[in-house]
Length: 240
Image (cartoon, rainbow, N blue to C red):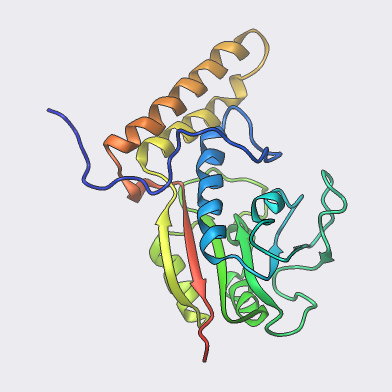
């Protein structure tokens, strides 16, 4: 019996990557294929003016947003070791030393899970955003523990909607980044990382590549978004 879903993934996991994120590697390449499409989609529709990138790290998405914004201000609580010039403002996500309604666009990619008080972080984002401006946010749902011990939460699409609405945002869009098979290929690849060394390295790397290649294509046939590894949320600060 042939399996075919009515739903289709919004973002393809089969195209090449273009932006050379410093964390991209053989075990997670499919995630960056999707993430680039997610952010290109979001930038083209919602990014403008002055963008505040909270939790920017080495500011890997600066080039992607450059055609859509006038300024890209990086905010993080420590300077980036990879790119010491990337962080423009040293500050945590709860207390950014900028005035109210300072930004036209806010970007939080894979930051929310590292906040022990996410409500404070989202409230600070609301404060910083001008009325009519947009918050572009991604947060993981099914993902391994990372950056321990500062890894606190995972977010369903309903959790993101609730968190944003409670802060006063108007939720514009929420999308899964992938389905079950892309998520499965990522979990498998991360589990195999410990074997990706020595004489086994070519074989294990090949398994990772094949699993991700097959998963991106099978998601188009059997799309199960309730297993998505992450979600995109777009929220707007109301005009009044």
